[in-house]
Image (cartoon, rainbow, N blue to C red; front, side, top):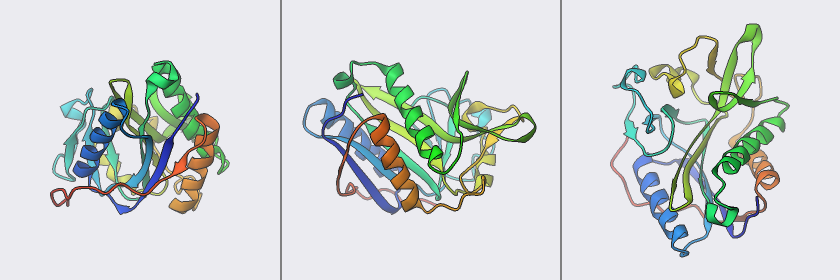
Length: 230
């Protein structure tokens, strides 16, 4: 994939979900109108669950545990929280031949490349979205989720990679609708890798360059104040 004028921004601390979603939708619209550069935005959210367009009510196992947000991205229920690197990817696919399959494959290659920098062999699995690692006794765990949406051929939402989140928080949902006991969730820390978020961001940056091309550093978005979150 080629790239041009892609900004790369990192928000410190925890970013509330509702203002982040509002910013992301506005920025995607501005990109589609030719009024803003493309953007990869890295952040962490406070603990929350999001429901994609395929989410099934029965997969929300603990509806009162954390705030739950309906969202227009593809996929089912996911968890976001501290220790998980979320990256919202706002790219103009018209510049890239409107090839959605290739875009998703590039996102997968990006995440696989980031994991590889810590000696982790991750990969994709037929019929299961995201990036996975093999564990003992035939088990497989998801280390990164992918959920995107396109509007006027501009992508938004993106990926979530588990660096060192509280994995028990995933128990409030059936993650991505996958209930098979052979499949779970993991993180860099769970796999024995102590990695700071700054160091992981460096790995993401390197892997992004390999998968998509160069980016330019940008200031973190300034968000409108949203409602308080638990």
